[in-house]
Length: 298
Image (cartoon, rainbow, N blue to C red; front, side):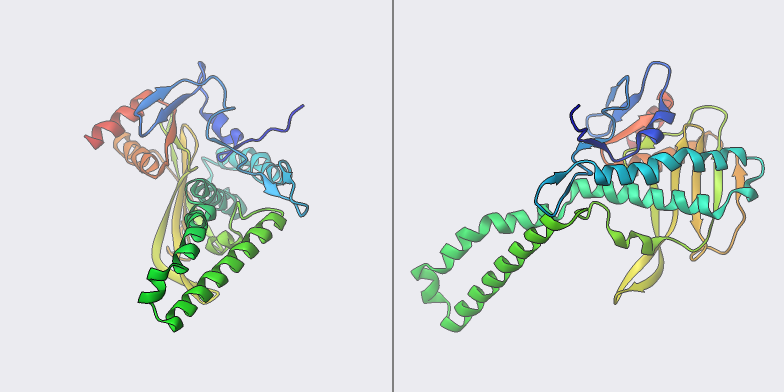
């Protein structure tokens, strides 16, 4: 059997909660096109998203994928159950559950962002233009216009960049997990939080390809000499009728978990947020949802 290399940036265990009797309703933002895939196999995927390099230079298709599966896929329904069983007693929802979903939302956004802006995307233009630039510095025209001292400085900069680039590429080959998830994301996690549960009787909420929404605050903290904005709250559509908003107690005053029944206008506001945060695709639980969103954009 061949090794699966199409990896999901939103776990399939989450995606499957948005399946309808006739499959899925996948909406493409840019094309404004609705598709109807029957399986979650090709929804929110990227080839080799979780593939990493081994020390011998070979590709590792399974280690990171297995780790992601163990931590996120295998625990999603466990923590979802804690939320659903306590809808009428929200004060019983554990802080561990809320922290799991807070982290889950941040991870989802960071991993999806990595698809759009990779370190290689920044480095490659310099790398590709480097030989031409080195040849340019050797031309008579440049040597006439630039002093020997300045030309020497430029050559040193280019030489230093070339060495650092080579060192970076060599290190990346040896890294077991090649920065698919920044380890620093944990600094954004709150010590405690509380939640608002938006619950509807009908299927109402959409699922974006970035997992959920995350908002930064004015509050900052220092990490290794750099100031970062704290995440004030995250919001995740756990199922088509349950949207979980988790508030950071480092930003908000301590609060209690509570259940809220949103009206149609408030549901539309939540879906609009999710749609705006989505990168290219969203899953619909109700075809009427996208009509409201598109009408707001006209």
